[in-house]
Image (cartoon, rainbow, N blue to C red; front, top):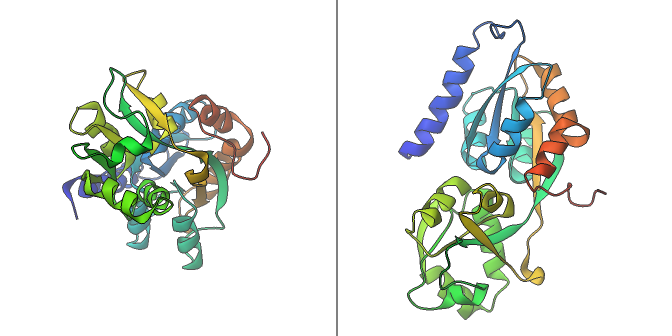
Length: 256
């Protein structure tokens, strides 16, 4: 396990240990949320407006958070940047039936100050450097889905320019922002959250994957009632508004 992933696991364990009997100092229960890194801004905003509990969130790659739950870690809630991991956990009896609560859009992130990448085709050019998510994390899966839609030779050229496979979108954003690479595949919400430091290069619509986020209550969690209330707010209330403000789209197939 990488040091970053070890820290992510430690953060969840620490959060679970810190809640003690399950209540915060103000008398509210403490809701422990494990969520995909791309949800950080939206969930942090929603947490401030969630009256039923104090929210303690831990963010990392969806694959790592799912693995933690399989290993016996029990946050109250698991929110993933895909539907695959919640569904797998449901099939194993570890979470309640998942709900799709948001959509997103994959883009190419580049520094706002300019650069040599203005289109997907530019990623094929020799000398261009790229960061993407690792194959096991949702953003990495979506990215490879895009590349599989290219002619085989073109996709191979892009992959040859990859210098970093990151465990979550935060890692990709960091590499681009630091100038370690020319571009990275992330979600539009991640670019929006940089306050203008990065800008997005859109992908051709024909190659855009369907990005769907799934959420589920973890079985055996301390506060299933509040977890279900949190999910309801993601669909219809303050959580949905926080997601929209952060640039997330409605769940695929749903109306506005």
